[in-house]
Image (cartoon, rainbow, N blue to C red; front, side, top):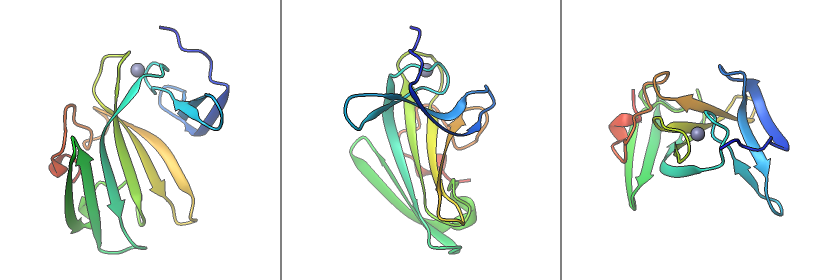
Length: 143
Ligand SMILES: [Zn+2]
């Protein structure tokens, strides 16, 4: 399936495949459709969600993972959490693409020191946090 050209592209930096970091296609009203960073299709299914709650530079981070109706919470040393933000809050959502074969891709949200929220993709094979079929184990999200 050849995806249509995105009409509204939101990107922060060019990725390794020369695609914008995050691509969206306009939808009805004020909504947009997130496109697969591998193939550009619009069939990304949400899987595990991991929330990283960290105050500015706190030595510990509360990590909450939710999958299949179950939530797991741990307080971990901040340097071991895999938080996409270096000093603040972060969020990761695992996605499986229904169109392209391949392991899970992760959309990472990170707050930077200027108070901005940065979006980026994490790909299996390039990041150790990414584990196909990782349902819930927080050990898949810590270093
Ligand atoms: Zn895909």
